[in-house]
Image (cartoon, rainbow, N blue to C red; front, side, top):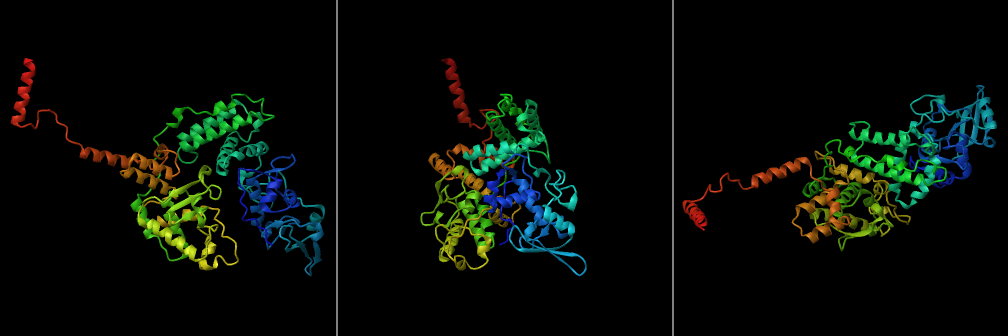
Amino acid sequence: MSRAYKGVRLKKNRVYTVQDLMDAYKVSQNTVSNWTNTGLRPSDEHRPHVFRGAVVTSFHDQRRARKLSQLRRGEFKCVACKMAVFPTSDSVTFKPTRSGASFLSAVCPECSASIHRLGSEADLAVLRDGPNPNTSEDFAHEEKRSGPADIGIIEDSLGSVNDRIIHKWQTFAGRYSEKTIDRHLESIRFFEKTIDQKPFDRLTEKDVEKCRSTLKRALEAEGEGALSKSTVQHHASHLRAFLEWLLKQDGFKRLPNDLSEYIALPKAAYAAGIPTQPRPYPTIEEAREMLLAMPDRTLRQKRDRAIFALAFLGALRADTLISLRFGDIDVEHRKIIQDARRSRTKNGKSQQIVWFPIPIEFEETVNNWCQRLKDAGFEGEDALFPEAGCLEHDLKFAKIGGGRLPIMRSKHAVTQAFKAASANCMQAYTPHSARHTIAHERDVRPLTHEERRAWSENMGHENEQITDTHYAKMSDDRRFEVFEAMIDDAPSIRSNPLDGLTDEELGACVREALSRKRQ
């Protein structure tokens, strides 16, 4: 069986134990030990080992990218799993050739395939004594530098002295969603990079202040190094929470008690410049025209049209869209069942979403797709939007062999659907623009207060203020247009209140004024 591990996607900022790697790659502990013996670097020298995700991914990428001319002494390139490997010494056989070279054969420790190469006595010596694959600290991981065998790596994928305490934080952060954990880890790694990988148990107020200054400069910067107001706010918030947790851990309690206070930024820093323009979104009529212009000849194109239509029909996020199952769509009652136990939803929110009252073409597109799946024998647990591989042939053959069709793990299909829909537009719209469009539709309709509230709650918002704050923000151009229309429609202002009165009206005003004067 081939084990190229291309389907395994570790998260670069996370820290993994040996058991975590065994579970992710479905290998034994001996295999992980072999990796460390042949170049995989643990985060530190302590046991049990922990590894940074970026380091493990880089290690496997290097082995796949290694060419025959780059093989180290005793190393083989496996044709089956595409890995550069060191076989066990007991599986190696040596056979001299007529030309005087040596022909080595062995068994790949990763996939058990037969591997061969021309070698030398030096290769045999390495295999007998154990591999020594240039594991100096300078060349174990590198990318832009050149070293023995020109093996390259990602510069920032080196292990960190802080990985062990970060792994402990990951255990604490299990109460958060996976996405939230990733966002916090991005902030922690940003902080670590800012202070030059300094151990967290030696932090000072100056280190935290240095990070705060970096965030302030990033708000004012342009181009490379610039960060948005939202990103800076989240970094500051996440780092404050992390530092508060850190001060409670054994070995870190001697740090200054007010360390977390030094990351707070002044309000004036967030007002450094004019706010950026809100992200563009189409009107519902423009979205309708985009839908009708999308091609629908192949099954994949029909699927993309259904993805685009359902994004507007339910104001759904891309991750939720792609994780829906066939049974989550109630065509008869025009509803979407958003179950957080089955679908990937924000903040684990479950709800029933009624289809928004938008042009009938959106509803017809989704209905036609669901009917096609039903005719193909799809059941409740099958993916509503199958992988592209299942669409290469007729859907009737997708269910052969039994079992259910799994949901997609990546949001790429949603991005591509919106890219196809925007092909003939001047502006490229993102999947999240559908939610802005639906929020804007609420604002332009003459709805009652109760109807506006129902509209916002159907979008998954607790109140109207959330919709107003985060969605369908008005651009400067639109604001100018609204004001121009207000000025054009406004009644002219008279410089003199008596201007424009008839003689009779003017005489009545004079008589009334004289009467008041006599009184």
